[in-house]
Amino acid sequence: MAPDPTIMQAVEQLGYRVTVGDVATQAGLKVEVANLGLLALASEAGGHLQVADTGDIVYLFPKDFRAILRKKYFQLRLQEWWKKVWGVLFYLIRISFGIFLIASIALITITIIIIISAANSDRDSNDRGGNFGGGFFYFPDLFWYFSPNYGTDYQERRREGREKSDLNFFEAIFSFLFGDGDPNAKLEERR
Image (cartoon, rainbow, N blue to C red; front, side, top):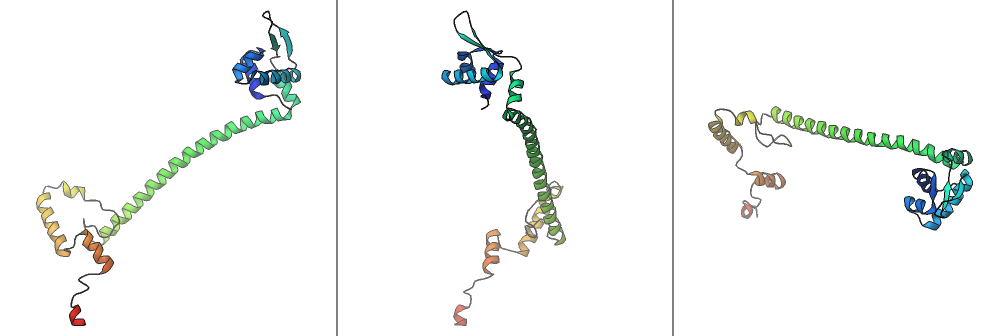
């Protein structure tokens, strides 16, 4: 069984000369687990036990203990290889997500522009001017708003629109759905 990677990392961070308490604190492990892990790591990697001046047991590991363990355990080599591959894969996933996000925004923008231009071309081909009919979207003619004859021209356009149809928007929808006129007109005569 391969040694615990958190204990190996803690040993490296603490300078290869560690006590059980140092490793338990650094790795966030229980003292018993850290003690067993350090004993296993020392036996596998060629670590030595020393007694400090304070009476604590100190584990001294060689600086190349990872290379020694890599030679013994295929699993450690595989983990390190996978860590490198995963770093590259994760970078590619992040890049592809960004590219996909930008491409989808561009595609949505292009689609909206195509729909608006198709609606405007339908409106222009039907000679309906600024009325609602003919297209899905309604965009007012901004040049007409800023023209010098806006006030008088506006009144004439409203009169033309009223002459074409006296129905408001909701009446036009009702007329489209249910037909024009009173369905009960001349009901008595038909009976």
